[in-house]
Image (cartoon, rainbow, N blue to C red; front, top):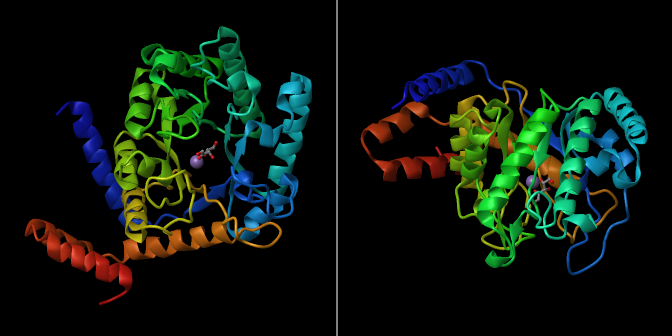
Amino acid sequence: MSRDWRRRGLKIERVIQNSMSKPTTYRFSFGPWNISEGADPFGPEVRPAFPHEKKYALYKPMGFDGVQFHDDDVVPGIDELNSAQISKQCAKVKKMLDNQGLTPEFVAPRLWFAPQTVDGGYTSNSAKDRKYALDRTLRTIDIAREIGSKAVVLWLAREGSYIRESKNARLAYQRILETINAMLAHDKDIEIWIEPKPNEPTDMAYVPTIGHTVALAYASSDPKRVKGLIETAHALLAGLDPSDEMAFALAHDKLGSVHLNDQNGLKYDQDKNFGAANLRTAYNQVRVLEEAGYGKKGEFIGLDVKAMRTQKGKCVTSHLTGSREIFLHLVEKVRSTDEKLVQQFRDARDYEALELYILKHLMGIK
Ligand code: XUL
Ligand code: MN
């Protein structure tokens, strides 16, 4: 074991002790896209539109302090505006956030809508389209700084392939790394949080897991500023356990944020309410976060949940408040887990008894 790893191990033990002595007060965030009109690939909107500007007033009363943005959530029509116009719009959004007492958690370049990114951005075979993707990403960093956000999220939506032969995958990974380095060079403070996802909209996406993300971080020119954002559903779509993915990132000090939600098997990306498909998996995610002291340095609990299409009403938000409530109930479950008993079961290697204890604890049976 290298000395660095040993030091990190000791640090993790300290964090576990700290998190036991001082409970974390969690802060929650979501993006305006999480309040949607219910369109899906098979049908149109089913609820009346509710403008983005009106959504921000809902955050605080719902118990949320952080806003996650796409670049064009901050600056609608971004591709048609010059930098002075973009700055003016950023100032307007910053004022609104200050007035509402909200923190802009991150800004993500929406690189999956433009005609230039049909075949990907950073990994497109067209040099002109790669330049569009980089320019828009650097502009997103400027937007993040102007509204007071310390991070840019890269969900690498169309960086992948539908057929293997269409791209050189090794070159694609090199191009992603070059983009990360160009972003780090563009701004000396900005953090880059990559949100891995294995598929959808592409068949096979590059950077499908947090392992790929952490490898890219270490290969970059400033590893400290490159982290991951783990979404429950994305980890499940990769056939992985989201709490283990989070633990891996935390062991490397590389969990920038989370998108908690749920996923019922290997289907399309469902963004179900947190805990809705598998409460025990949700409990284990909360357990890993809580044990590591996640949130003590201001990290947010982000919820990337989608309202059911069947839900009636204008501006449906109960999926967000419900997911937040379930998270907080699970924090209580984690805090009331009898850790001494867990340790006894571990020492005796009696995992049958441990499993029964956990299931009964989750069901509220003494
Ligand atoms: C896509 C996804 C996105 C990102 C933000 O599956 O999760 O909403 O979280 O661009
Ligand atoms: Mn997400």
